[in-house]
Amino acid sequence: MEKVWVDAKKNNGEPTKALLFVMHEDEYQDLGADQAGLCLACGAEVYYVEPDAVGYRCEECDARRVVGVEQALLMGRIRFKEDA
Image (cartoon, rainbow, N blue to C red; front, side, top):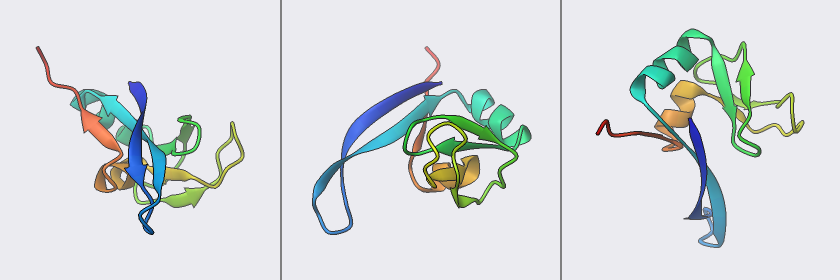
């Protein structure tokens, strides 16, 4: 899995950066099977997270920015790699 910072906009239109997770579909499925979540602040993988979780605490950076992998996909934070 790659972690990439991209330009984004806040709800009020101000520019910001957003963390995207780029992975193969099988990696996504493995994360879901492992009950993993992703921290939108630091990029850490956190385990024992519900798929639709939002705002869980990150064990690495202590931010309440962990979301479940299904929620991250719905939020547009996961992109799948194309197989070459």
